[in-house]
Structures are given as C-alpha cells and as structure tokens.
Image 1 (tube, rainbow, N blue to C red):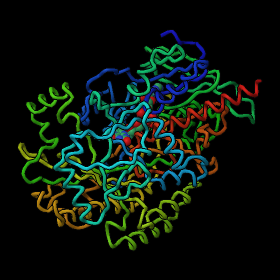
Image 2 (cartoon, protein in one colour):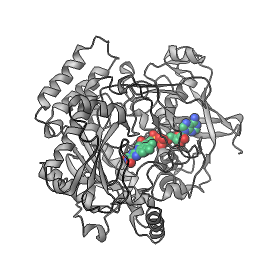
Image 3 (cartoon, rainbow, N blue to C red):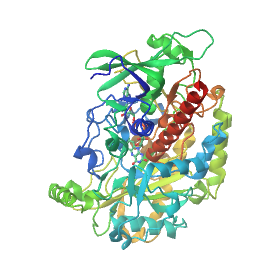
Image 4 (cartoon, rainbow, N blue to C red):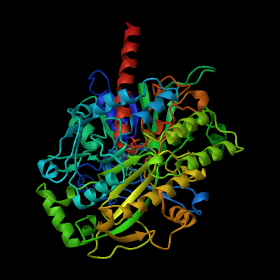
Length: 602
Ligand SMILES: Cc1cc2nc3c(=O)[nH]c(=O)nc-3n(C[C@H](O)[C@H](O)[C@H](O)COP(=O)(O)OP(=O)(O)OC[C@H]3O[C@@H](n4cnc5c(N)ncnc54)[C@H](O)[C@@H]3O)c2cc1C
C-alpha cells in the first residue's frame, strides 16, 4: 500500500457497482488520476461469485456480505431483518441474483418531475445502452420459448454482458401463459420503457463463459493495468476531509481518511471526492464527515460542518412476499439442486458451458393494481384517506412524491404497482420442501412504498454498522398492496395452465384465508428485495435533497454521491442496471465539469 498521503484527481469511496463503473470511465482520460478505496477484499476470479444460479451462497459470509441488521419493525410484529449487501470489488453486483431489469419510462420521468432536469427515460436509455452488450438468445432457448426483442433499445458495445439465461421452461411457460390467459399482455421487449405485462428478463451473464458479468469483470478487470487507475481493497473510509471552512462558503473536500491494516491514512483529492459506498454507507460517511442532521451528529459526537437534513432520510425499500406451490409431474427446477449428485453434475456441466448452472430468475410480470382487482378504485380511495388523514407534518417535498405515486396508482392502464416473479423452486420460509418434489414460488414485490425509513450512523466508529429503520408498513396501504398481490397470485389457480400444472399451494396454505390472516402471513414472512434507495436523495435542497442533479452534495464544491442512494422515488424495477446508468451519467457530468474548469483556466 503506497498511496498514503498521495494525491489523485478523483478519490472514489467504494469499489462496488457504481464505484467501479465510474472509476473505469473517468480513467479513460489518461491525463487524470483515479483512486478507488474499497472496504472489502478483491474477491476476484472467485467461483462463488462467478458461477450463476448459486442464489444466496455468499449471504452472511463476511468475506462477501455486510449483512446489516435492521432495527425491530413495529409494523411487522417486531421482527428484525438482515439486509445483505455486497462487500469487495463489485459490491452488490457480485452477490445479487443477476436479474437484469429496467424501469418503466414513467418512473424515470418521475425523477425529473421532482426537480431533476436531465434525469428522464431518454437519458436513461442512452446511458443504459452505453453500459451493456446484449447477446440475443441462443437458438437452444429460442426453440423452446419465442423471445422477442427490439435491437435498438439494447447496448451492443458496453462492458456488462447480458443475455437470456438458461430457463426451467416448464415453470416459465406455466407462468407466462397463465398470465396471458388472465388478460396480461406479452411484452415484446421490456427494455423499451413499457414493462406492463409478462416477459422473460435477461441476466447479466456472459454467454461465452456463462459466468456473472458484474462491475469487477465488466468495468474493472479489462482496465486494471491503466497506470492512472489505482484500486486499494480492505481500505475502509472513515470520513471525508475538508479544507478549513470559511463562514458562508461551500465546503471543499481535500481527500479522505481511511483505515488500512489497522492504521489510519489519508489520500488527497485535487479535484473531487465521490461517495459510491451504496445506500447504507454513503449517508453514514457523510454523517461521520460532519454533514447531516444536527441532532444525529450531536448524538454521535461529530462536529457539524454542514446541516443537510435529508442525509439518511427518505429511505425506500422494495419488500417481497412469496407464495409457493407444488408442481404436478415434478418438472426440472432449482429444487433438484438440493440433491448433491445433481449439483455436482450441474457444476461439471457448467465447466463445459452447459447445464442448469446457467439458469436465472427470468419470468416477470408487472401490471397496474386495476388489472389485479376490481376493488382498485375503493383501495385507492383508502390510500388517499390514509395519506390525507395523517396528523403528522410531512417532511418537505414528500407530498410531491406521494402525488406522483398516487397518479401512478390511479393510472389503471399503465401505472405499474404490481410485480410478480416466478422463482422456479421452493423459496418460502414456513414449510420445508420435500425431496423428489418440484415447486414454483411466486414472489410479489412492493414497488412504490409510501412508508419512508431512515439510515443513520450510530457512532463515530466507521466499522459500526449504521442504524437501519425501513419502517415497513408504517403506511398501512403498503401492506394492503401486498395482500392484493397474494390474492391475485391465488387466482392463478383458477386459470390454465396453472390450474392443472399445480398440485396445491404450500405457503401460506389453506389455513390462511381471510385478509387478516394474509396480513399476518405477510408481516411474519416478508423480506427485503435489497433494492433500497433514497438515503442521499437527488432533490431540491429545500425538499429534503442531499445532492443536486449534478450529483453534488449541497453546500460543497467537489463532493458527489454516485450510487443507488440518490434515487429519490422508487422505481418499478430491480436496481442493478440503474446503478450503472447513474455511474455512466455521472462520468459525463464529471468530465464536463473538468473540461469547463480547464477552459476557465485557459
Ligand atoms: C442480495 C442482493 C440481491 C440483488 N438482486 C438483484 C437482482 O437480481 N437484480 C437487480 O437488478 N438488482 C439486484 N440487487 C440490487 C443491486 O445489486 C444494487 O442495487 C446495486 O448493485 C447497488 O449498487 P451501488 O453501487 O449503489 O452499491 P454497492 O454495489 O453495494 O457498492 C457499495 C460498495 O461500497 C463499499 N463500501 C461501503 N462502505 C465503505 C467504506 N466506508 N469504505 C470503503 N468502501 C466502502 C462496499 O463494500 C461496496 O463494495 C440485489 C442486491 C442484493 C444485495
């Protein structure tokens, strides 16, 4: 480690999804120097990461996973949760489920409507295409399932490799055909801004090797020898350092302090410091650096440098619930992986580029509440009443977010509030799967929660995990939406081919009938989808914003946040692809800022 005390143009905190993508793009310019400090290990060339379809294998292992505990959740029967988050190069892109999903255009446009010019669907499309190379599905897959796609919305030269994963087709066909028979449409290409209907998702797999394509392999490894790019792992950033602040002026970040092999060091930034530590740790680092709410900083004993009340607030998580069914005829599903012999054979086949280890989670459906239930108008009325009857004074700007969420709910044609995903295997936490049997678990996801949580530093110690309070179901309507999901999923049993393809429901099972019983099932078994956003929201400052549309922290000259924490209102999507969009756009913003600075200097 020979960087202590050295100066780089850009210091990036966190070598995760967005951090490595940004570092790779910025270091394309040989005249600038970039350093990335990552708290975790490198974890490169690691089969636990690279070989797909090993869902959850790295969870809870401190080599890969931060495993953050939440506080007790008052509205979920006092339960506490563990939130996995990737640690090491690639961050969460190294431990996620590789479902490559993008939001509907309207959700991205909502970000712009909240006061962020340039953060709209057209820009999203431009940057997401830059981030990926899409490989059309292999003929082997096309033969079974007729995939359709529109070439022009996919990237053809970006670092992240994407394709249709190998599928357990019996389940996919069961799911898709049933939903079409229930009135949903088959979406031609869900990457064009319209996700309303049912479709097969890509996975971020490289079809040459059938391995995970993630920030470390896609953005970092190909450029690791650049002389102007330095990446240091096992380096935990404790705080951002600032020049002595002169009253009334913006703060200037001069570098960061970090801990490496139990000693404290610093590096200097001659241009900018960028926080890419993710939704949970970017706000923690801001607070440890003296930026945030005065009462939080006082509690942890940090001198307030800049009051910014939005830090760690406006937190929104996608939570999900599963309904599992036993399948007739025991078709091939992930359930077979519980058999050590099958698994060994799957690994052997993978070495030859074949077999089920290439599988993904791919059958999705997104649709409006009105497509799920005839009670939608009454439910929406109830949501309205809940939001307007509350005596609490809403934080500044939250009403605007609620208005957009209500508009989405009311749009019975295209407003997406429901999501169900077919997991081909047993994935619910109450019953145990039986050997020789096959299952499908339909996972239902809350896309636009009204509840807002908070994430704050608990102490001055950067190794102390922050306090995480998602406040699940603080707004009861969030729970109601999940009840509607469960009821909708159960109606699939009345429709072919699900009707004859399924033997019976396993969880929650026949004892769970009334809405009240479904509510209890949800409260006792729901979990995070690991898509948390909002803790460093991009919003006008007076509306709770932490960063402006240039991703610059308000009140600073050269400190940005570039990760998924800046999303101010949740999207009906999984967030991996979006993290790259943020990084790609940030790279353009930072390059433009440097060009301007150089021009001014003459
Ligand atoms: C278990 C799981 C499954 C998921 N499944 C999917 C999926 O299938 N599809 C999908 O679209 N999305 C999925 N996601 C979400 C998606 O992966 C994330 O939203 C996205 O990767 C977040 O990127 P990020 O850059 O914001 O943060 P991260 O990728 O988490 O990067 C943050 C990095 O900062 C580092 N860091 C933190 N603090 C410090 C510090 N003090 N000093 C130095 N380094 C620090 C961390 O170690 C980490 O490497 C999943 C996420 C998880 C956790």
